[in-house]
Amino acid sequence: MQEAGPTVRAGRHLDADVAVAGAALALVAVAFVVGWWLNRAGVPLYAGTAPIFARWGVRVGPGTPLALLVAAAVVQYGPPLAARLPWRRLLAGTYAGAVGWIVSLALIDGWHDGLATKLDQEQEYLPEVAGVTDIPATVRGFAARIIDFQPDSWNTHVAGHPPGALLVFVWLHRIGLGGADWAAVVCVAAGALTAVAVPVTLRALGDEAAARAAAPFLVLFPGAVWLGVSADAIFAGVTATGIALLALGAARGGGAGTIAALAGGALLGFGLFLSYGMTLTAPLALATALVLGRIRPLLIGAAGTLTVVAVFAVAGFWWYDGYHLVVDRYYQGIAHERPYAYWVWANLACLVLAAGPAAAPVLRRVLLAVRPARPPRQDPVASPRLQRVVARARAAPVALPLAAGIAITAADLSGLSKAEVERIWLPFSVWLLAGAALLPGGHRRRWLIAQAVTALTVNHLLLTVW
Image (cartoon, rainbow, N blue to C red; front, top):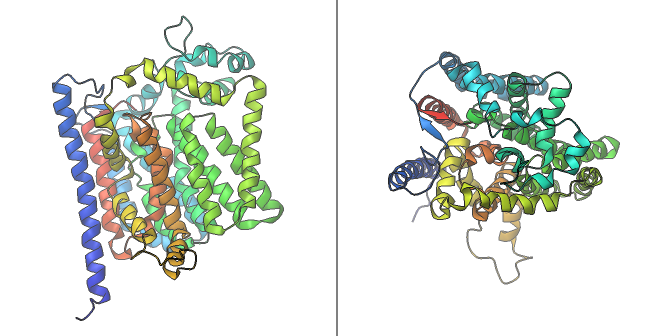
């Protein structure tokens, strides 16, 4: 029998890509239908439009035409500009595009309702800022106020994170940038860093073509719906920059490489004190070492991370103790009532809406790359087939989405991420788009359209809490 030609095989791959994206969107539809039914039945999902933490609200606003303009410009001009612009101009344009996309989506509800108000809610960080009059004393006594139902318990978001998250907003207040408006500006600025950090990482890991292919997808990241209105944008920006510096350190070597790796590790260390979940950036850090085959920069980065841990320990906050107290606080609240049996799969529907339907075929192609076509021979070390699988796994557009997928799977199965993951998983979901180069070049504009439509649909139909 004659073997199928390249055109036929490419067509089959495209059909499979569309099918897996369709299945992902079908999962979203099923999650909404089941969530509606469970809410009607009185099951405590604590999410009115489950799986998304929001409420229905069809509308248009001042940001609608701006968002449409940004989306159209990126779809039309993004891929060719990304392919030919000088590197620094590409990064500047990507950052500006990401800021424009985040802000335009938020402005659908106006500046105040779309950005500032959401960061100043009762259970957010800003209401606790005024009570922090002594930073060292706050850090020393932070853990004692995590458990709920005490007179001086922290509110939900402050208690649910290490002290670094609160300190960011306290520091802003101390330098004269207090209040919800400045908090929104910082969240947007930090969140947009992800659109630069991912391409920088890909290029540092030896694949500039993949970096350029990913740039337009990172600009039109559907998770931008939440990047401008939650502190998780800061978590995503800080940790993504940390991974990028770690990759630069591994690529450059020498004194500059050592400084970059140390700084990257320090940022990842500070990420641990922004959110306990940032421990799951470890697979991404390991991926940089896997791709380049260099362990020394990773060890240097670990030294930077441990330095930050030591600083907080000396200041009076031990991360591990805080984590255990947060788990107790987690189950004091609505989390112990939210059914794991629903959220363990409905969380993935949230991921589809945050990462976009293009993430599904990217992951399909990643899994194909790391799956051997047939079982290896008896000696797995000597197997050429296994060696080819390892070689493919060391490609940056494969390794980074794979690492992000591992982190997301661990977070999902842990039961400590039931609902609200559309924002909680932003530091991981953005890395799925590092594999955009795996999508056929001739079809990337179509996937960019799907990404933009996803974000626009969510923000025009749902009044998200964040």
